[in-house]
View 1 (spheres, rainbow over the protein chains, first blue to last red):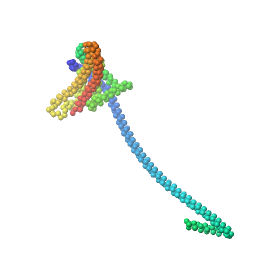
View 2 (cartoon, rainbow over the protein chains, first blue to last red):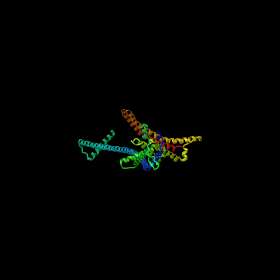
View 3 (cartoon, chains in turn purple, green):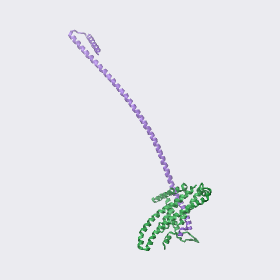
View 4 (tube, rainbow over the protein chains, first blue to last red):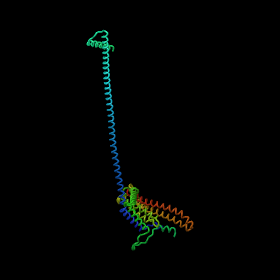
Length: 169
Length: 253
């Protein structure tokens, strides 16, 4: 048991030398390159991470810019749409007014035409009636009237009928 | 041979009696095992540092990088801070050397060199030297001496505090050696004792000896697994405590 607890200083010295030599050899031939590789890899990861963060920020900035442009385009489109609707409404009103005016004009023209046709027809009827009456009068009286006098008489009768018609109206 | 003699025979170091002229060389079974472990460590670590094309070499290199990263982020920087980075090689070697030395005892016919107080004492001596070197490097010679007296200590307490702090540092280093030595020795002794139980009972009755073999072997397997755990744990504890003690010296005010 005594031997167990009393250190052999020769072994101790040899262990110190062996261990320190091992530390030096491993530092030179193993740990140095492993630490270097690890640090390079970590540096690469850090660079990649920084690049990814930068790319993300750029993408966010570009997205914000695009969003702003999109909003602007959307606003412009809405504004143009409103203008187009207003213009369309104005044109519609204008066209409607024009159509109504044209229709009114056509109606009035038609009415005037009808009135003229009616008057012409009435004149013709009156002339026919007057001529028939004059012919009947000539046959009854047995007298001949010259053409000019006959026409004058007819015109006078017609004028009287017209005047009577106007007075009744 | 007595039981205690058998155990002592297996545990104690044996001088091979090699002479260099009149000078007796300290070549023993433990030192030979230590040389073997050193060679194996050299080969393994140099292979780990190489980047080959084969899957095995790449795997080994990745393992090496992960090991270095673990030592740096798990032991050196938490214990010593960023100032400990230049000493990373020392800690990487220390952990693997102790681990391989602890595990060597689990291989038949091999010796647990960390059950030798001279070996653990030598490792603690190296760690103690590192602690003192850190103190001198970061505080200067006189600055390091001054760290043994905490700031604000009354002058009349200095003669008491200073030797106490110096002894405290020496004890810490000695405890490093004793803890590793005691843990590895006790584990090895328990393993041997369990095996010898079979023979002791067998001497009294062969049937009882054969009957005791089954539970003794079960316990033996359990203890071997426990020793495996202890081998890792003690290597970790020794390395971590060295780092913490060095850190205490570096960051003492």
